[in-house]
Image (cartoon, rainbow, N blue to C red; front, top):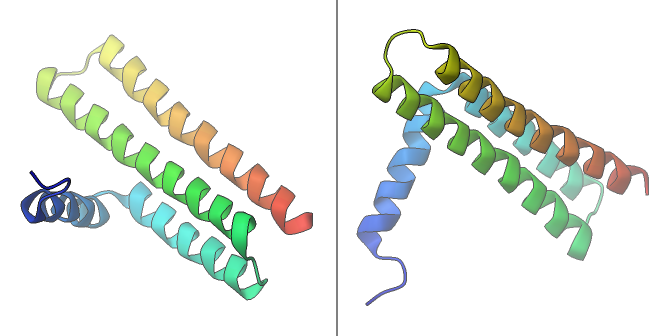
Length: 113
């Protein structure tokens, strides 16, 4: 058994592509990630600093993808307006916000340090 089959990899890429096409927040975060990574390379980040920026960027993007999954699942299960579903969506979005703020603060600490 292969660790990651080509078929699974294609499904993952399709999900990534679909998210980039359909989710404005994900597109925005991809653009910010590109700017941050370009800045890190331009400033000469190497080793652990560059690895940390890459990891923080990946965590925020993955968080947004999980948020999208939860929102779509809730829409599927409860297509009508529902107070609890709305609270779950808001909390999931808040989790992404916390990840993004932590990544920004960590990046600022690295850029200034």
